[in-house]
Length: 267
Image 1 (cartoon, rainbow, N blue to C red):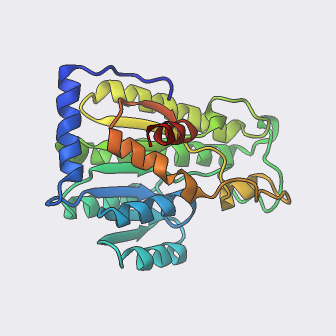
Image 2 (cartoon, one colour):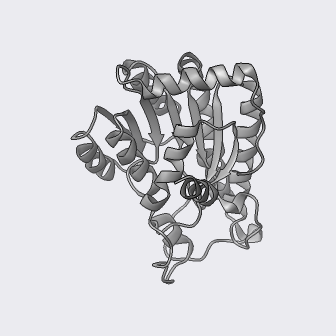
């Protein structure tokens, strides 16, 4: 675990205890708002939280896949599923309202992302010299503007619950990979925004999490024609996120691999 931005004070310990009681209290069913929840990591996190008794507000662009996810999750918990783009002002407002109808957000997971802001159609990731500017703009809108805008809307709910924000990051945010300039730069911006928000909202937990390489559709799109079957499935990193919610560490940037290693060492 790296780059933490807070230290535990007496007040921090009290806040952590209050939040842990609220999330673990059998009389309170906490609420999670998850973007990009129709497939990949977002869907696995939604499934895990549903099994743990969380109520869910989920969203994704594709209505068919989102409806499929909602049908599965509804057998486990209460679900509000709203299809739409996180870039759209009205859609974000609808998500915040759906969460309010459930009693307010305890956990916001900003998971929705785009590689390039346009359909690669089997092409390689563009270099910065060749990156279409409309796609670059869309990349930053989806990967950084959308999460910040949604966070602004639900901050009053999160302050009330003393809740947490998980912003899904990437190793591309800290390592320079050719072809990953747009995506990596947008995730680096999200990391930095997360650290600043943690300073500005000390009663919340703000975690930027690098889940590592995973066998997902988006990762396959980044490597057209290549075999990515050696990458782990998204479900394998879910325990790392459960560890965050269980241990309630200070705000900061975390790598799922380190969280998983720490969890194994404690067993």
